[in-house]
Structures are given as C-alpha cells and as structure tokens.
Image (cartoon, rainbow, N blue to C red; front, side, top):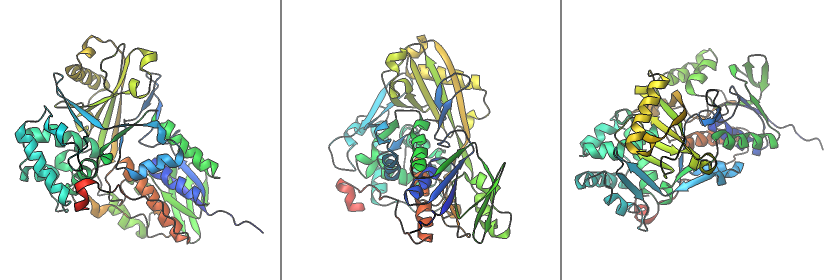
Length: 464
C-alpha cells in the first residue's frame, strides 16, 4: 500500500508562536519547514554569545506564571519543563534597602497573599485599603472595554499615589510592557485576575535556569525528529497565494508549500503580504499597532552583591533584578555576581548611549544593594529591544486579526493576533496552537492543542 505524502506547511518565524505551531503540526503528521532569519531559535526570547563580553546572554529576561497553562504544556511537550525554577514569593525593595515580601499563605483564593500583603512595608494602610477595594471589583467581574486607560480607571477607583507607584506600576508595566496610561483596562484586569486572584498556583513565578535558546533549540529538535526541517538564517521576502498552494520567496529561491503559518511580527508580515486588494484590510489593521521597548542591562561584578535570586525594584528607572549567576547555578564557580536589570516600557532609555545606561543602572543598583558599591564592575552590556512588544492600548482588540485569513491556505500566529491574551510568552504559544488547530481543521483533522485555563480555587470559584 502506497503511503500518502505528508501535507507540506511552511512556518515563517522561529519565535515561540512559530515553534508552538511547528511542534503541533509536526506531531499531527505535517511536513514542517520552519524559516528563521536569525542564526538561532526563540525570536525575542533567545540568547546568544555577546561579541563584546564573550558571555552568553538572553536578549531580555523572560518569566512565566503558573497561569500560563499553554506555555507550561509546550515546555512539557518539548521536554524542558524541568529547566524552570518556580517561586511563590516576590520581594519588593525600596531605595535604601527596605524590603517587602508578598508570599502565599494557606488561606483560600483570593486571600492567599493577604497576610504578607498586610505586612508590606512599602504600602501604608490607606494604600492597602485602596488596593483591596480594586481587587474586590476585579474578583467579581472583568471590566469591559470602554476606551479608558488603566491609570485613569485606577484614579476613578480611588487609588493613592503610593498604591499606583509601589503595586500597580511594577506589576503591570513588567507584565504588559507599557505605561499605565497606555494600557487597556481589560488587559490590566486580566493580568491581575489570572495571576493574583484565581488561585495560589496561578501566581507562582517561573524563571528559566538555562539560557533561553537552550530551551527553544529543543523545539527545533522536536520538529526535526518528526521529519521536519529547521532553516536558520533564512528570511522570507514575500509570499504569493495560488490556488493549489503558496509560493515563498527567500533571498536565493522560490518554494511551493501547501500551507503557510506566518508567525512573524506584525510589521514584518505587512512587508511580505501580497500586494493586492485582498491583503488591504489586513495590512490596514496591522498599521494600527504601536510598539513598546524593553531594555536589559547585564552587569558582571567581582563579588556577590545579594543573596536574592530576583527582586522588584521600586521608585527608580530599573525595575527588576535577576541574579543570573544564582539562577544559572554559576555563583560558586565564578565567585562574583552576574545580574540582569530589566526596564520594561523603556522609552526613556532608547536614545541614551550604552555608557549612560550602564552608569545610571549601576548607580541605582547601589541604592538597593549597598554591597554593589564596593564591588568592581568587570564588564557590562546593554541590549535594547526597541520593538519588543505591541502596545496593549485601549481598543486594540479591534485590530488583532484571527488565525484564519482570506486565503484558505494561509494562517496567522503571533502574540499580537486575537488570542485574548496580551503580548506574553503564553499569548505567543496560544497563537501558535490556535493557528495549528485552524490548519488541521482545514484538512479535516480537527485536532485540539490549546489547553484550558487554570480553574479558579477557593472563594474565586463563586465568580468563575
């Protein structure tokens, strides 16, 4: 009996969206060819050997939460789930070194962090009562989209300046990579409800213990083990849709595929779309997106500067500290400290020079960790992702496209597509799985890859 050839599908883009789609489709019997213009996989969640330092660095620190069910399932699928270290507490540090720890207790959701929240020194009782009132609102129901930004919404709900500066800003700016006055109310509410309120498990924070590309190269091997092909340093210049397939043009060849999943950023997609009237509505929607930058500052010191693995830093430009030498298990061998400082929505840093950013970051770091003042800075680098994520502006959902397109053989993935989640790793994986589901349905398979959200626990079950 002659075996039928596998349907061919090209996945354009080797970030999380493309890798998730590629793994799901390879598992489902498609012949997957994945194109990635960079020499490594992971997209914006990748690592590489930095030429100026000789060190392997992540382009930006990425973390996940327990509510990221599809991302966790993706890690399980490719066999890297054990390379994530989980934490059940957040340490907030003010300039001068005063700390506040938000951690879980045995109370039912949504009260599982209440004891530590009440003891947080960075907030007074007025601040805590104001935050509690908003949490009570968000626990009951997610606000609808009205075009209002979240900062204005907080003002209407009686939030104090310290509550905004020491709670809402560090949580949401890091999660959504945008300033509060440019964040949609439903997206901000979604983050708080899913991560802080629904259950204790949902709020656990996972941090990779290996460089990011070590995680996602496993996804490439997963695809290859199922007959697929990974082509690095292979950007796609254009696509042309025909009756029996899709033609993809790269720098040196034109190839035919039966199906295509585009998992590139929205601005890249706009450049490679067919130049005809059928593409005009999608290109118009893509033109409405705006972007926000992230900056990672990598510092290597000759000695230890803190015992913490990570911390939220308040009231300064730098927002998070990740103690990479501890997270990567290299503290003992080096004797020093390698830390990465993250600034989300880093618009104020885009025009600054590398040295200006390093000086600013080091000076601020010493305000939180006095040991850094006496430590010698051995080397440093700055990585700017100027177009890191799309901005979750009010009403942006009106422009986020579905996975299906006007072309029956072309499907879209990317954290900017209509996943219902903001620009996160979870949103990217959901988009890849969603595109793969639509493609398998088109050939009569009707496969399901998306996994359900975490169920609400405790008293939150009353509001599910």
